[in-house]
Image (cartoon, rainbow, N blue to C red; front, side):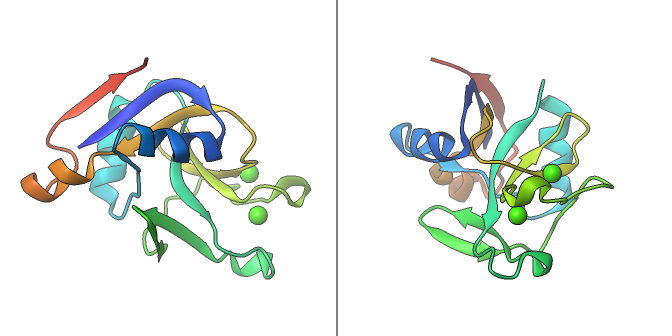
Length: 135
Ligand SMILES: [Ca+2]
Ligand SMILES: [Ca+2]
């Protein structure tokens, strides 16, 4: 189950906020997941994508958070001009309103996309239910 935490947070704050609510920062691994999220979101959202190292920027080294683990990015849907690493500081992934991804500076604030790991495993589907909320 995906959910959008509507308050705007930095990427790091989204990460810690996910833990507070016993959720995970969302990883998006397939096109269908991306499409579902793009349909429901009202504005850009941080997802749990980041560069595991920027030593070799052109190579990307993009990864996803999977709970406490990290996995290499196998699916991506970058916008046409992205990732462009403006000023050499864009190392995290935001999903824009059009559903495509951009690299962005982690200090920017956006809503956060979370998944509920427990329901995910039970239902074997992240997108059977979708809700949006804020506290
Ligand atoms: Ca970068
Ligand atoms: Ca960018």
